[in-house]
Length: 334
Image (tube, rainbow, N blue to C red; front, side, top):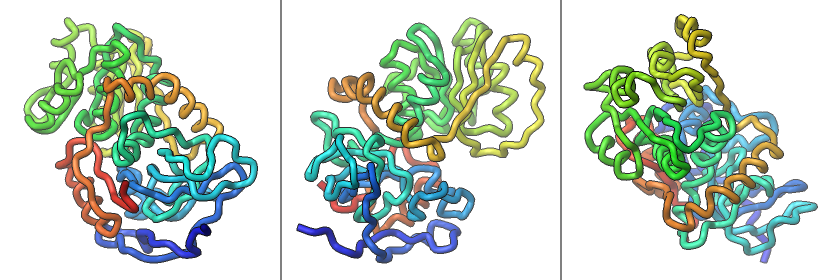
């Protein structure tokens, strides 16, 4: 059976607030060599989606202009040379864009099988957060069992993923959050301590919790006023892992502790990386993290699910920061 020539998707027009997201129709994409066409069951909502919608984060060259970076679904067409997938396979995937739609093309190496026992909804909540945390905390940050890490934004999708994975691999995890409900949610998934940044100084708390030594790694998506304080909270040979800037990225910092403590400051963005890089991350996740998912040691936390046509409401919720965990969109459903 052939796929429809047109599909429904969510258009963000020329950019703006959540209200610019409106249902529309366009041509169904055709998979290029090495790509699969996926009929989307569910799509995840992520901070970069909000940036792209607002007009501040254009997609990389060659990527779909449609918003959305992760899906679960069924393979309905194969591009030339595809060897890893067959028609009818169910998968979840990190997309290069285009997830807020009925169909999306994905490089075959960026897709992973649905973990055993997982629903399509749960599987769609994995790619963006797990690829991001794996590459930054474990590949670049080299976090090891017995070390400690501070995760900022602990109740976000990224934060809850980082807490669970760091805990599963034997690290002691601290995090910052903005209210008591978020404290409880982080402790429930494995945080050793959750610090309410509105009522506590996270540097003082971290130093207390580590007998003044500081943490071995910090995962930060805040930037701004956190930059100098992160340096104070790091231990000798500590690693600061920057993945985003919710506060300004331009800030005055005294870097003397970088030398005094022999610190490493690194960061990355996922979207512009090559298909080969993303395939390597996928392979490592499949080998080292999928068994944890299938054993029930790690699981995505899903906060709310919206219909695709209500993507504007999903973005408004994301930008309110009231959520704990993932915000998802139903496309075709299970």
